[in-house]
Length: 398
Ligand code: FES
Ligand SMILES: [Fe+2]
Image (cartoon, rainbow, N blue to C red; front, side, top):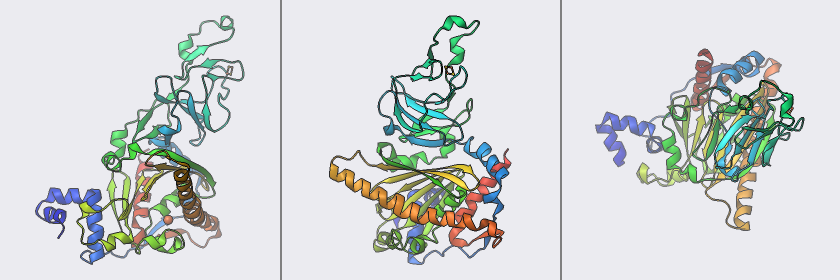
């Protein structure tokens, strides 16, 4: 018996801890692989198709989930210098996240406070010395403060301090830039992460470096993509020509933290090294850990790099899929850059786009046909149903 399992058998607290730690999930995978623990019992669960097609529901999801929970919009190493900026409308709001002269990162509505003109026109990365409105050239500093009003004498009874850019709560944590997309809201990342920050520290996420990004406009509901990332059933089937051969069939364990779902999917190497104690296993090589961060994010710890995915709903059948690939360091040579590039192409295009997104879009296409009024999930897909239950609960909170 591995040491930690022995400890857990004598101590309910250790058992609880084991069940909710990464090592605990690895121990459960080993027990499953040895046949000491049964696979989850069969079940047939259903999610109504209206959850993926109803425009009013989508609006409630945006209002109550996307705008109320912290969102990851990028990585701090994307904007290393003062004036470096990210411009994006992904959240249904024109936003700019930028680094100021003191090195702090903040997010503002990309909207002039005079007569409302958009300040930075193009989405993507930018580098600016200040934000100058093209209309009448009101000028804002990198800290969002109004610095100059041309012909200021033509206005009366205004205090420039009332016309600074509107800021949104923003914080860098584990290297990721988190934004709360409702001005005036408070963002509490500690309570949001429900203890998972410790895992991210263990994975040394904060030391990772931005490598590549893709933004895909995909023709499906955002929750179909979450379903795909919470489903261990398809891995050796849908991915049989890409990453499937690295995994045994549907050997996965999950744990719930707040409304986040942590999954550990066994890799073949876990079966090869069954004699090792869970603490002796390498979390990136013996399993693939992924975190479905509620509501619309997925973090996947691949053996050599990390994928950070944010899903931004635009319509019931349209989602922006934003994938940032993080690497343990900035590439040290052209050779290493090529290696990271090839890895990105394989995972981003070969696996996510050609396989996971392909089936998500394929399912959405058939929704109007009348073939199904609900989708069926079995025991190997149960975490996806749990995710839908969390969505329902959060929508019910108003
Ligand atoms: S609208 Fe921006 S300066 Fe007038
Ligand atoms: Fe997949």
